[in-house]
Image 1 (tube, rainbow, N blue to C red):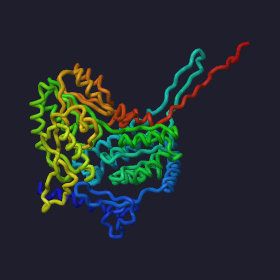
Image 2 (image 1 turned 60 degrees about the vertical axis):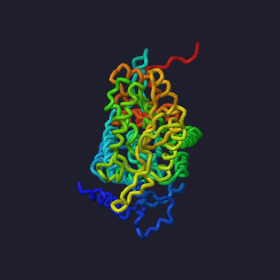
Image 3 (image 1 turned 90 degrees about the vertical axis):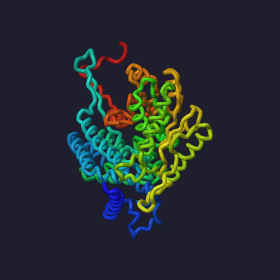
Image 4 (image 1 turned 120 degrees about the vertical axis):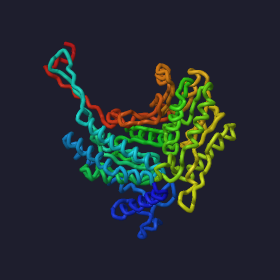
Length: 514
């Protein structure tokens, strides 16, 4: 590949974004449009890799939200009245549209998040599969029928019915995936949906809004509100919203849960994590190293299920650490549009500084910095990358369970190595966390693997792998990592209400003693 071709690709992606927005009537306004200075807007989103402004936009106000909610309720009735097979066809068509423009959606996602283009495309393609998955559930999404003895004509049946209008709030690390994971099962269950993306990453959710319309969904069935916590709280508190799904911080989850509890509406929360990865003494070290990379460095380490607590049996700690360092040394950091780049930019300079502060805190508490944790320096003559948003992948050794860096979620590319001597010990230490999103174990003994999987207090466990979420596998946590599941048939059930209908098939007995 021409060394400058990816730079041109990056530039063309930005130009295509601006061309799309200038032609549209969308609330996002191109930052390069000379007709809009940005001074009259509430938010500006940036390309994390260059820190160049991409779009300006105003926060959705409460009056606009009221109108959107009313229209969404009308659209929901139209949607639910359609024959189920018609809804199947429409959702599959949305998936086809996503797949047809996967390259462009990946470019938008990479511009929004700073993650490598190849990784963004994998996210988009998996989302296209999600439409197929949930569309396929619709024809069999029905209740049950059961006779009630002794009268052979008496029976009861159940119905799965939609809530009406549901709402979702997403985080900035997987913006398109969250918009899809929350909206598709809601629509498959017969609901309408209003989604609020993170104010840092509004691009792909707005494009998804257009794709739902292009596929033939009723007008206003899926809508997007833009802005920060204020409009998010208004969305959760809106009287027409009957269920909410939230992905974000524990603090944000508590706020959503308080609102939902006050209104007595159901909620799904996917919050933070501090997951363990256990490397047993019999593990294949090469496989374990690859799994450790998967568990920590996708999306620049900004993944809630990441296993930054890597527990290594003390008998193999030295060779494992040596192999891990050798692999981390090969990780290329740079322009997300460079196909050879493994890690792109963190979401913002403030977040990069926060990650760096965790590393310095660990060193001050006695940890040893084995590699990384530094700001890379790029050739300013050939690239306009912003150094302040990048950090090299980091490994810390000599860590202990009481360190801040071991207990708290870092949300960055930082591995903390911890040694153990026995299975009982590592299970106890792994579970000694307020979080419980995921966990993993590398071993060649499947009996050991299943035994540990049973004991780990978390929503997902990986055996000889990590951070693989194919459509259909439930995703969600224990403890402070939240409750409810996404990406599976369990999600579909959670977007519906169960109604029981009893039918008397004979004459009623006299109800009281004679």
